[in-house]
Image (cartoon, rainbow, N blue to C red; front, side):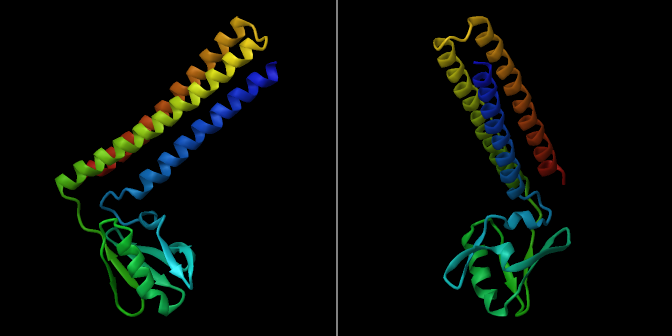
Length: 187
């Protein structure tokens, strides 16, 4: 019976870890007025009929804080890459000089900063909901184990441990949000 309880902990922990890593990935996509190759993560380009991640068909560099340079490995991919960046609707306009694609990162306005902070908070809330769902699922599994013979005391102590885990992961999510908000609001 104790193995099943441990399994509940492991599944809950894995789900909470996944929520945090997803939050980190989503926060990385939200630009803070500084050039970062991660802004282009999640952009796929039609590469000879195959939807391919941009970073697998080009080098992506940041020569300074306000510029991203995309250098395709094949010159004929310049137009499809430009098209994919525009279609991604990330608020950036690529420029093509025949060799590489330059993307200038404009300074954020106060209004845009506030929009991005709202977006960050929404992502954070999604992560917290995922963490709470992992807790609920684990607690439901523990109640099933109690019906199968797990002692009530052990079930309650296991729920308390899962609640502690939930609190820890919620704090991790909150600290990630604070860092990103501070980053966005710093001019």
